[in-house]
Image 1 (cartoon, helix red, strand yellow):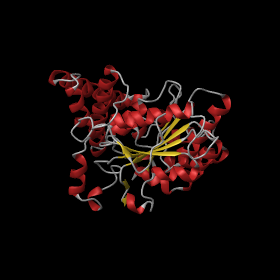
Image 2 (image 1 turned 90 degrees about the vertical axis):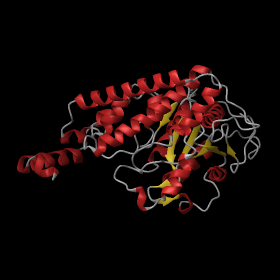
Image 3 (image 1 turned 120 degrees about the vertical axis):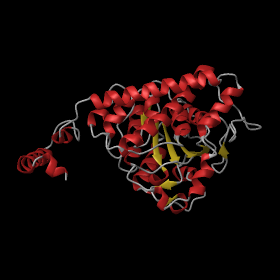
Amino acid sequence: MSARRDPRDRVQVLDEDGRVREGATVPDIDDESLVRMYREMRLARHFDTRAVSLQRQGRMGTYPPLSGQEAAQVGSAMALSDGDWLFPSYREHAAAHVRGVGLERTLRYWMGDERGNALDDVNVFPVAVPIATQVLHATGAAWAADLRGDDAAVLCYFGDGATSEGDFHEGLNFAGVFDVPAVFFCNNNQWAISVPRERQSASATLAQKAHAYGFEGVLVDGMDPLAVYQVTSEALSKAKDPDPVADDAPGRATRPTLVEAIQYRFGAHTTADDPSVYRDDDEVERWKRKDPIPRLEAYLREQGLLDDESVDAIEAEVETEVKAAIDAAERTERPVPADMFDHAYAERTRRLDEQATALERLRERYGDEELLE
């Protein structure tokens, strides 16, 4: 782990034009992984565009766009080891894909099929739509891993709005007290739906909140995938093999880290949202100049890892992969309304049985079409 950083200092490797900043250290990542990072980001952007289009056409339910946040998701998820665990919120489609969750599953979930959230074959927890609840789950899982002696860490994602929730405080406070192997990754995309970052907290940064819990906070340029990869890798290494003595707590190792990744969501909070009501177009355009995809592409071209031909090939592959996922998701037989009661708990409770019976009576009386109206 590198020397402890002041959480007011934003870590950045690439500038907005894709050049390595003076004095910056490029993370140790091989050429193949760098190209994969770029491909995963391109895939996420194209998937996002198609998913929004599907929703607008009535072929999918409400969907949370991720465009602009590809670097934070892909860069951090690629830092995980095989045995590590990922806890998403509801926008980490790209991070989940890096960890083995197919695009078809993500589409099926947002089409209303809970089977798309069945993730028993990957180290990824289900999508968490309630704000900040996954912070508690991640802390508990990290504590369990520590008690078992597993060589594993937990990476937990949430947005800036989650830091206003009690679950955030409870989770991080517990993590600090019990010194769990966790990395709490705040995707600060500047807006909690329509509430700007400055209305979320009077703290100069969200990263500095970690000090109150007894561990380190790091601020990183969330639209710089190399910086995100570097910071997350260091935090995960510290979680699994902490320094013997921490600067701010002599004699006691501090394993958790709070990462605040500064970024911007180019689109709406969800497809049910109209960001033009609360955001200026000029603000969006300013942030688009920091777009992480051309930024990484410029760097990889400079390194001789990409050229026009390889970029075109990646674009074609991405389009084919996304189309195949959409076709597969739409071919899958849709669930019936009563299926929703089967995915709340491992076994149905008496209360759920009562609700399922009540729904069936309404369907018999009115029919599905009238109920939906």
